[in-house]
Image (cartoon, rainbow, N blue to C red; front, side, top):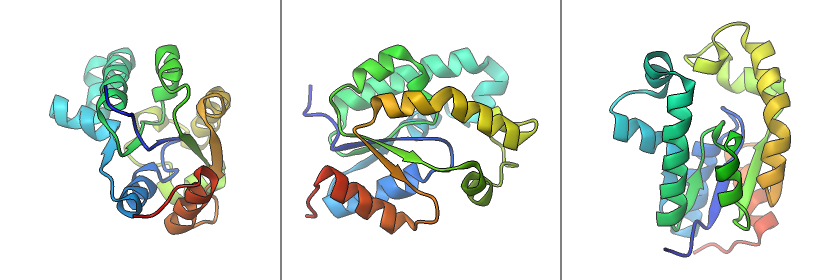
Length: 172
């Protein structure tokens, strides 16, 4: 077992976890890892294809395993998929870790994601579905987070700085 991740980013799709995570990792001189990318690499297909071909339950099992492995092995900046916090064992695993919830409102999500891309959970009426997803998940993001950082109307660099300040991180 390693010392665990330096920072774990959670939040909805489009909140900037990948972009901000890479910036944080660079500033910390640490590696960056994304559990969604781990799943895509291991499965050899996109997440949307896994949802369509095998169903959400299968994807969530893959996600749970990917998060468990990443938390155990990774000592840099880690981004989790938007729905990873739905699993109770994953939330328990995050207890005590420096978890940051990147929050945003629906207007920001529309601006960033367009809510019309190939996101499997937003296939029909994406604006309403995004709101419903957030209503179901917001309290879970907050539950696991040590810090909440709003990303609305902020650049990735500003979000990264807010995380640095909130967690009292030091640049390399």
